[in-house]
Image 1 (spheres, each protein chain N blue to C red):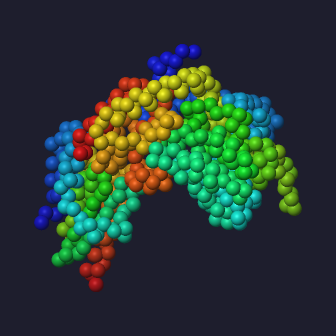
Image 2 (cartoon, rainbow over the protein chains, first blue to last red):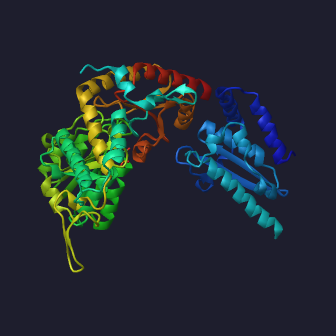
Length: 142
Length: 405
Ligand SMILES: Cc1ncc(COP(=O)(O)O)c(C=O)c1O
């Protein structure tokens, strides 16, 4: 399994192929469409991250010392970014998730979507991913 | 004056700018309007030349600022055909005005009393009244809406009774653009002895209400929706009602005499104007009203109506596009969704093309719940918008649909 850093670099390369916003968005939308569907039984209110406009569901599990995230959104562009975050952070060790930065989001030109004032729930999703990782980290140390 | 769209657009510096590398197409006028140079100049002039606190100084500058502020109050009085200048209370906006009245009614209402709201309201015209009902034990009743997004007037009549003390409804719905039959609402409320507050936040940029003819008890609005600055608005109240209500906030300006034993309150309008007001904002609000009248509300209504008809017709040509708010009486607001596509996605793509619309629930969640949707895309047009901008919107929506489908 690749580490967080190399997945981020892979994404930066992938997005550098596009020279206008439309292609970038089309790619993001297709990533969203290809995100494996979350088990509908997991789309419960306690997994819901309220973002005012678009909803994000996030579920996590610890498997063999790694955090596995599954997620969904009702808006496709949001879902595209959800898919990117899942690709970067899922199947990673809790401590790596806790320490990782998210500068790659700027570099692939999607910064505006992770602005705290954008009502799409992504900032809260990222925060929640880190919180889960912190919790699993504590659990593993016991 | 002839309606000349080119020269009107030239009055608004912001309309010349680009967003995301494209000419700005500003279709979020229901959230706030843009400001003409005249209004911007009035703000600069105030701070450059006669900034002083009002109603208190003996010095000339203070007198000058006071005179200009009171002139603005007179302009507002005239514009809305209000009988007396002291029936115009300066507020920070619609929300402030509603809270002021709701707070006042806390001393009037009690168990067994009923108040009526409509299903078409902005949260600003719901939450303060819910708080009032919690405080007083009065009961909140709701006028239901129809599938067209209009009020069910038969149901309204049935809700009214001798227990009804207050009715509060918006003049125009911000989420759907529906113009409510407020004449009828006011008339029927008065027949059972209830007072009426009309939330005019969305109306006053499109029409010029005659408040004496409407015979309304309270009317609130915000300057920022009418080409004026943010943070200022008015509450109109009939003199007898304003005398009946207790002050909202205590402080300077609103008192006659203060001692630790007893304070007596100032006369209207000062009783409701505690603290240093938004002096500059009030004056610039007056300038904005002058500007709108110079263009003329007949010309504004005519142009906006043409834009609304054109935009509705063109948007409906898009397959799978559904408009919410289809009553015959509506203003230049189009709330819509594309089948199977989230409004947030459409708004994001439009933004990339320089087109500013609002997406979401528009602070009117009960309406979205009624239609069982997460929100809508809302294009709200002003007198400075053009057919070409409508074309840009339609092309943008088509593009978004193609990308998102
Ligand atoms: C119908 C309606 N009521 C009230 C408000 C609140 O106005 P303000 O935020 O200026 O107080 C708005 C603003 O969007 C509105 O559209």
